[in-house]
Length: 117
Image (cartoon, rainbow, N blue to C red):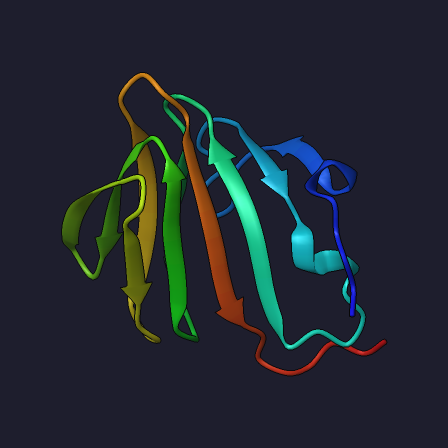
């Protein structure tokens, strides 16, 4: 078992897949040796986005707070707190923060293969 305090894994960085704006990343699973999945919290600052990118695994975006427009293979849906998008392997996906409040997401997906310890 690994217990992680999000305050120990926080960093400010541009979001992945296009570096559109800035975000606060909580890289929760990075400290788990031998992990088989990613589990992260990312807060997209106003105007920020995780750019469109193809995924090679199923992936989940869960909105903790704020509002965002998620896109998968050209279809876009508005998401708010308490909503999840289940995104399928092979899709081109991304999410854009909209509105006045930052968009806080939990992002989870399996790794292609287990990381070495």
